[in-house]
Length: 246
Image 1 (spheres, rainbow, N blue to C red):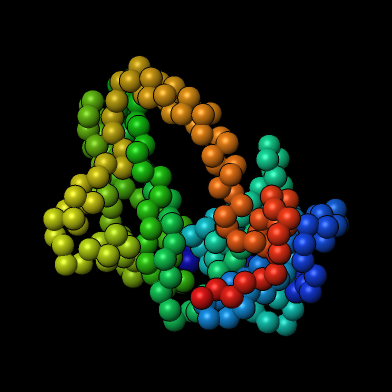
Image 2: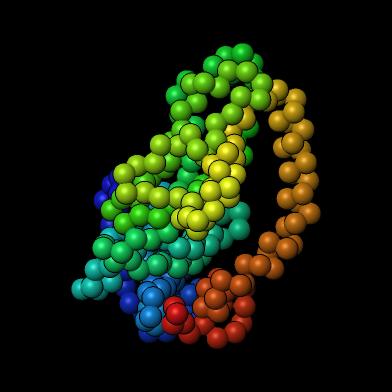
């Protein structure tokens, strides 16, 4: 873990859209803590505090979460924002155990001086995050790959070029431990490619058009993260009782 991120929460007994709206009016955000084999715990966190914690930890760094007198190690599993605003609507935390490995999506960064950018070429990033498995203390802030060899069109860096930190494994490799062909295919996937500016601009235009056409579908999926999260974020009028994370 790259830095110590702490967050204080308060346990709550009441749930629902009206309760959630009142909490937000008081500068609090409704949230739940999920823990394997146990019922979820309904909590609240400060709206500014959770923004700061998310900026530092994202979804890949463990947080020291204090709920009353109880301290838990947790990841931000899901975070919902108010549309068009930098305001948090609802948060789902995943409780961790210090001695048990956890899966997390970690950002991938191409680092170093990239010669292609001095040749009026651009770098097209094709993979933004990768799923890794590690103990909470070993979760990296980001995975880095050296971009100093990217000089000409179609030069690339792949997943296999990443030097994993000690104690960190790629989930996809673990899932295909007995299949060398699938492992090889996965590791050969490009993280970033050198392209001409005109090609990248054309690709971005296509992606933007597709994103606009899929907006309604994305909105319809937001209610599928659990009854409580959907209800308290104003997307559903159903029951919002905390669920057991089995």
